[in-house]
Image (tube, rainbow, N blue to C red; front, side, top):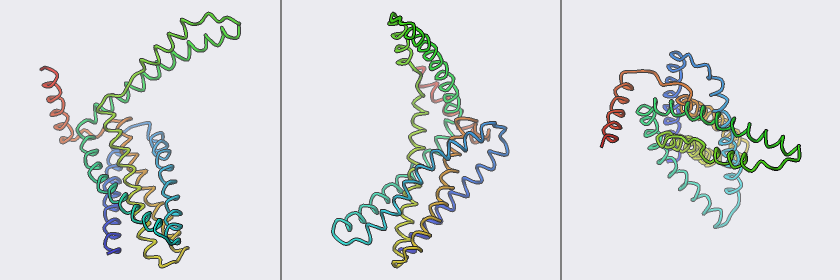
Length: 254
């Protein structure tokens, strides 16, 4: 049974990786985006801390299983329950997220551009006001109450992302974390099949974790690209966007 679900997990991971790689190759070929390096860096910044948690889980699984007692038995069962829940939920979230990306790609992309532009303008204005206040402080002039209130009002009215973009970002985070659950289940499987071979367990777990790190980084990169560059203009995408825009138009004409 242990070998069966391990094989299933590996198969799902490989299929997902192939899907992401093929999509990345297609998008990279058809895109002239100058932000590719920045997106990769951002993807790595997100993926590395997630992988760090997996490394801690490798150690935790080892110490949980080498100790005896009901507490450690409960912990082992808890690992399995939580991981299975996250994996099942993550599978649905992944499908919803991919559909969301196709349906609302243009809106999310445009919203992110608008948000970055307005945020930069807002923070630049606040920084300029605070620099003036700093100069007044140095001159022992403390009559800057109006300027300070103005800066506070500007900060309170700072731009926000559209609800569609917020929803997409939430789906992305849940999808990225579900990869950790798959990684965790593979680690548990490796421990069960290691038969007390500590070096074999640690070595195999690290190799699997590195592979999952690469898969998740690619997954994150694919999700972040929508914020920096539009998706490919396929017939399917165009048709989906037309339906979304028609629906929004009808809703807002009522």
